[in-house]
Amino acid sequence: MAAFLLRRLANRLVLGALAASLGYLLAAAALDPRAGYEGRVPRPPDAVVDARLTALNLNDRTPLADRYRTWAAGVLRGDFGRTSDGRPVGGELRRRLGVSLRLVTAGAVLGSVLGVLAGACAAVRRGTADRLISAGSYLLAAVPVFVLAVLLQSAAGAANDAAGVRVFQWVGETTPGESGVVDRVQHLVLPTVTIGLTQFALYCRYQRALMLDVLHADFVRTARAKGLRRRSALLRHGLRTAVAPLAAYFAYASGLLLLGGVFTEKVFGWHGIGEWLVDSIGRGDVNAVAAIGCVAACGVLSAGVVSDVLHGALDPRVRAAA
Image 1 (cartoon, rainbow, N blue to C red):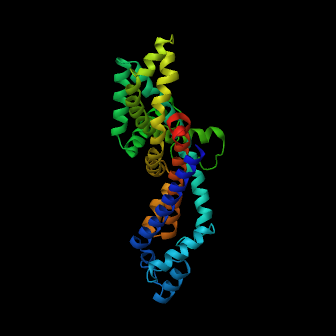
Image 2: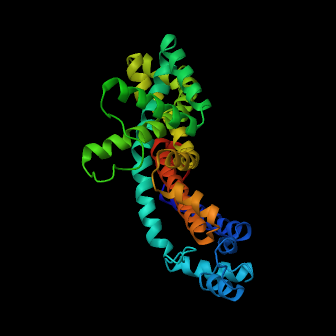
């Protein structure tokens, strides 16, 4: 299995490097850092603008290949360059990444775990429970994440009015002047529920379909013939087999998680990676956009590695082939 994981890791590292490079090349070719100086009064002379952009490796008059080599050499040293206003990208990236991780981690874990359990339950308990869970997951999957966030805000506002106190908070990570645990939890609830519901819908539908495929499989019938109760046979043999393909799906779902995090940050006013990406694109800040692309590529790469480990641990055929 170690050889299998090393091969997969090598492939993913190559893909990650290609994705990060492509992200920089697209940002450098499409964005216009020079536009940020056009509206200034008085407008800086062209020579001053060129000198400033060249110092930041953002000058569009420098050949793209030269800018890429400078950027790639810096990334290999751990230096992502500077933003259009001269601040180090690395420091801002670390701060924003911490905010984004606090935002999405709890919702992603809760949503995926509950989605797997609900999907398996829907497949096993055919009837009213199956119809309710399936209808709920299809409805959640059909609602865009930013619409879901706004609906939750409206519901939370109505709940606050009914209770007569502000049970839920949804603007920013904390209330200005407050730093207590209760205040942070109040601000975290709605974003967590938003992320969790979107992940729940994805995993629930997929897990239900996988579980239906193994309900009447030969190995489940054999386990029951040997004396295991239906519930024990499904949990010990059916669910483990049905979860194995879901481990491969985890890597692809991570991309949707990143996209959902971008919208969630903007709706709830969290100053994380997603908000920074949108603002940086508007400013034409190539280095910031490229750094975020690197982080996204590394995130999907890490999710792929975790997916490979889980797949190998759950599926004996992978260990045998390796």
